[in-house]
Amino acid sequence: MAEIDAPQFFQTDVGEKIAYKMSAGAGPTLIWCGGLKSDMEGTKAVHLHDWARARGQAYIRFDYFGHGQSSGEFIDGTISRWARDITEVRDCLTEGEVILIGSSMGGWAALLSAMKVTPRVAGLVLINPAPDFTEKLTVANWTEAQIKQLEDDGVVYEPSGYEEPYAYSKALIEDGRANQILDYPIPVTCPVRILQGYDDSVVPWQHSKHIIDMITSQDVTYTLVKSGDHSLSRPSDLTLIEAAINSLTEL
Image 1 (tube, rainbow, N blue to C red):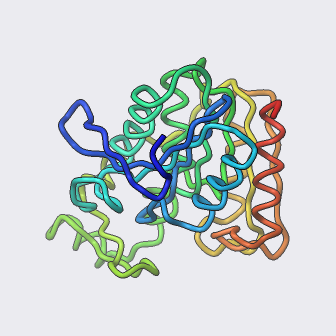
Image 2 (cartoon, rainbow, N blue to C red; image 1 turned 180 degrees about the horizontal axis):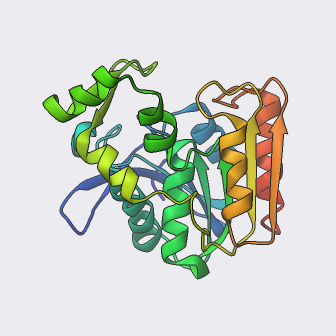
């Protein structure tokens, strides 16, 4: 087995290269699905990899198309493309059941992936999940000038907290609009654990809580973390994430 510090790559069905790090172990395999513009070296992704390896559970973290060490440009990415990355990681690198751990945008992408092949997904852990964020949290708060900019220039830039700003392309916005899931029943029947920061300034708790109303699974818990922010990366937050995973696996 390769050291987890050395990235590996696989080629998707459309010729893109997806970078990933994985360690073998017992199933179900944990698959980390990061947020918008984040990569597989984030605090939660690395912490959970170390935790999974110490307990002997299979784990994969990866970079979406246009993120981190994977091929492609971020501005060319869409929600459906990133959801497809999750599905391809699962199908190319794993056998048997998986648990998808989706953070922020990754929560939306993980739900979209689980909707496609629910029997492969033994559970979902969603951390400050942001389904429909492009339409309901981003465009909904844009000025008329920004909406006009999208039409005229095909992209709107906003600060991201990373080295480069968020680039909301017209393709991303239109694809997000077409893949909204909070207005209809979400056909996911596996157990779902949602952790949400009460003080999250990016994804309000009222937004993520709507998942409970729309998802068809009857095994859903929603944990609201007082003083928790959008990252939920404090030691106490990481312990909560571990507990959520533990509730879905026998290890």
